[in-house]
Length: 370
Image (cartoon, rainbow, N blue to C red; front, side, top):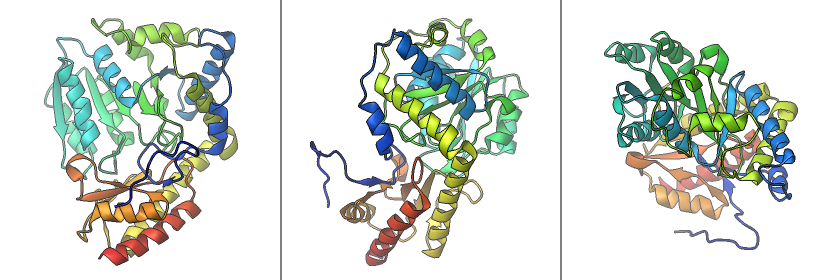
């Protein structure tokens, strides 16, 4: 098996087709290397404001956008800690490993948590959502838009309005789709829409971002024991000054401003969404042409990460290793799907040409291993 060791001089030379972290473009790496002022300086506040205003445009929202020094899991926990009172019930929709994670966050924080899940590979349909919501009264509902483990995209445009009709707050984990798939926060009425930046944003790990509705802040102010590090109210107070309560990774925020400028003003948001749609479609065409099988139920496949069933009973670690020799990294299945599936990430700055080159090598390897 091929081992890729730490490269002190050059860093990783692999071309990443993973569900994250993904390849970071050179223009961003150059921004990360620039010197910065302190996180309480005017210069930082100006940069922070540029980032949050850019996020509002990306998410089509007037809601306040917050920046967290954590992975997306940090904001997932923040939603639980800030929004669920002790005498309330929270509903967690789950279609895979990260839906299960959010439910476990609720349980480990002592919240009255209910999980409604479907078989991995399937999506939360409007019918399923309505049936689940009719069973009880829930104050907050949690759902993934894009489930990274199964490669399924939930039809949130249809499900979110059903949740909103119950009066519950709705939190959407868009970790592996934000900046790659359009989500119109204000049109849907999403209360918290969250993600980390090492996926479709094509930034190094270390930051998570979210939009937060006025109703969310109002609810959080009523909840006891919100904690300290992820307290929405304290974050909002500092955000008014375009700062964070504690020291953030300033270079990553500089990188975020650079990427948002590129997405909004150079590539264009709609063209970016179209490119990710084309990448997803092309990967599914390749799967069909190779007589392989997608893991997700037809019609609910992700445009940012393709999870492919191991229908040929391939030695997946060996396949991944052989592809590493070609300079590309894809990954095995996640959790209970290890060796049953493999995943190709096609997000961030990947172009169709890049995908075609990788798929050509992968095709040869699969044909050898059959």
